[in-house]
Length: 165
Image 1 (cartoon, helix red, strand yellow):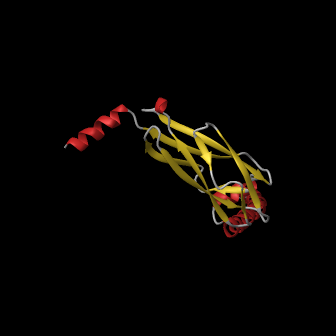
Image 2 (cartoon, rainbow, N blue to C red):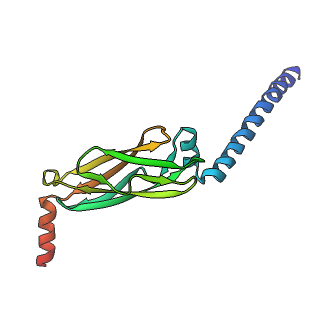
């Protein structure tokens, strides 16, 4: 019986710290949910990000060589002061950013649009281009990724067959 009593005493000793940790986690979770609306937003804030991207990677589907396609990224300010996006450095000259520079008020969202043009050399392959945003106040690197499939000759043949029928 004394052995069991010792085990219970050890468990009681652990109960207080475990309960305190649970209360802190629930409190931080509720604060984050009320402040940022999502767990992702709360985690981004604690990692030092000023902005939260709605979807860091956007798939725009099939595009033809020479065709321009645009995609918007919604950016939400996680800070209590305005955040300015001064510009973007892209992985290719085929990607351009519009709507920059842009200042987003605390708790508000803004949309930055990127346009991509596929070259003939990329026909029949996939494209994955990135844009690194320059933000103030500075934080961890913020990257938007655009993924597309560039139509090739096999798509032209199937398109012609559809038109003939």
